[in-house]
Length: 136
Image 1 (cartoon, rainbow, N blue to C red):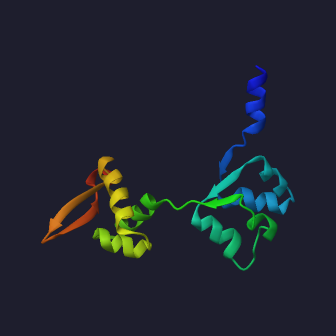
Image 2: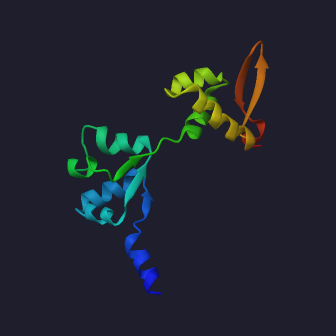
Image 3: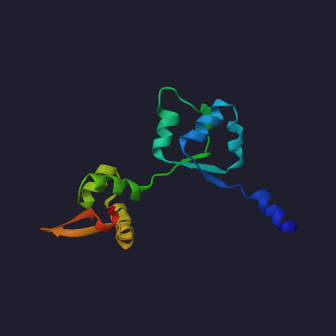
């Protein structure tokens, strides 16, 4: 039983957050509550909202720490681009600014999950959202 107490003490959980809790904790001066977490994963849009906007919300001491980790969800970004229309994997990679192999790896996972479909046009493969993704 004593070992479990040590594990609880040593283990610092990670957190995932959107901008609202960060904004409100900052407004009431309780950003110190974030120290309970080893790191906080936030999407790029949250980072832009709380850091890059002219009315910067978080103090630099919090922003400059290693506490925040910006998580780029490539699969969601690919789906967002495919909502605009069908595309080639190389174009997706160029639009996202990531490697072609990363896009192909993520597309394989999305294909296995029946989220996207491939079709061949000439010598090229074109990616589209699967018809099963669209609401009926």
